[in-house]
Length: 108
Image 1 (tube, rainbow, N blue to C red):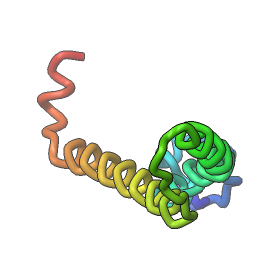
Image 2: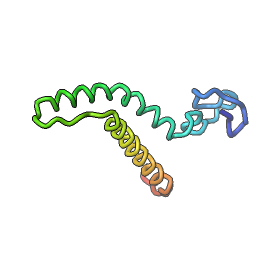
Image 3: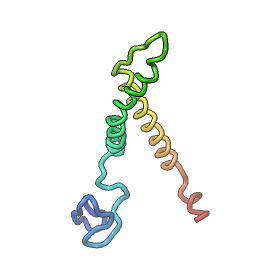
Image 4: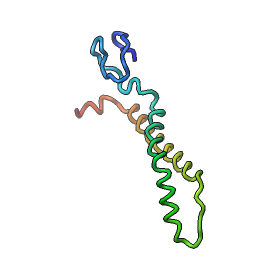
């Protein structure tokens, strides 16, 4: 990550430039936000998918009319969760981008 002030190269974990101690951009080096959201949701989906399958199968056993559980149902739920999270994050980012800075700084 390059410092905007002195143009020195810095590692991705630091929040401040090693050469001039200038603060680096928030989230710098983290990559695109969509990629980090996908990585954040990928692990819980992988862990909870088998648990959800077993729980749904156990819950559906006592019913007289059986419904088959297919993998596409769980994939659709994962895509829907990713879509909802992405839309929520986009909404908040757009709302923050359109906000007037003077109005929010007035009360600080």
